Length: 115
Length: 115
Image 1 (spheres, rainbow over the protein chains, first blue to last red):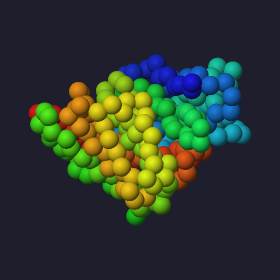
Image 2 (image 1 turned 90 degrees about the vertical axis):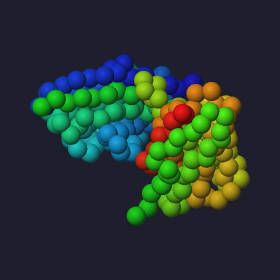
Image 3 (image 1 turned 60 degrees about the horizontal axis):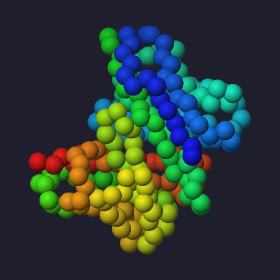
Image 4 (image 1 turned 120 degrees about the horizontal axis):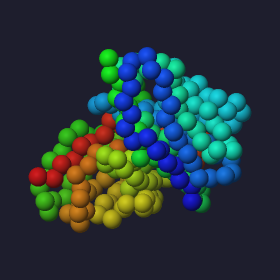
């Protein structure tokens, strides 16, 4: 079964530092990948997604992620974080069973950006 | 604005009581989902529904029940059989059952606390 793992559970960075959050998935075939973000007190929202084509995907708020098939990875990056990036970040991959396709989420990474 | 509305935002339940969490969407999405979010465990799927009058168990359905009488509505009942109901509950929807191609839209969540 497809699964996704996030190894960084809690990351603390100073403003302007560079960010890379890890995401690894288990499925070896065609795969769609998502990153969601949950800001404090807000609902989850889509940060970026990969379906096919260019493995470097750009999302909102300066985030990007690179799909590396050989490493089964889809790490999230940002060159310079801001205090407002403090949030929880979730990687997700679809799990297909029959006609349904449901998203399986990683355990999340809590990012804390300090001033 | 189109979106998903979850109510109430906060809910307190006494042990032994059943409570129902509301989820309404005006996005005309076919598929709807309920997830439970606990610290360090990410999002875990409780139930999902691909079409009106049909729903399927997710990974942690025990102690929960749902109904899908209308396309717009997917209420979740947390029964007294759920041993550890204190959590943050998220409702989501997607345009088609193959959510892997579209991702989800999330509601703002309901925080349930057992007192």
